[in-house]
Length: 48
Ligand SMILES: [Zn+2]
Image 1: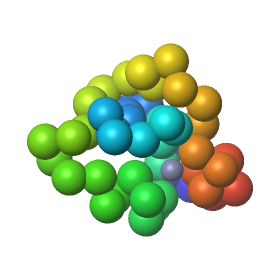
Image 2: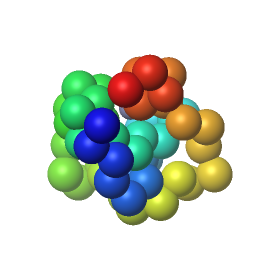
Image 3: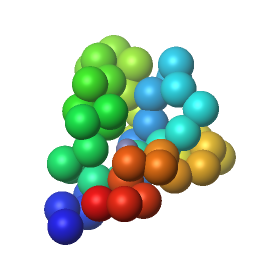
Image 4: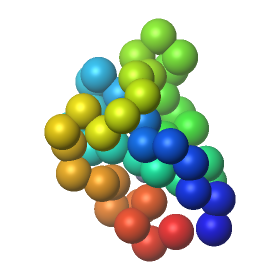
């Protein structure tokens, strides 16, 4: 478990809260925003 503050990509419909999420780690820095963006949690983060 490596929970972190929620973040999301402006190009994605989900948010992430785990540093081990490959999908979250693939977000390019310019597209990454802090907070949930009002989006649901990514299914990969949900399982981590
Ligand atoms: Zn995720």
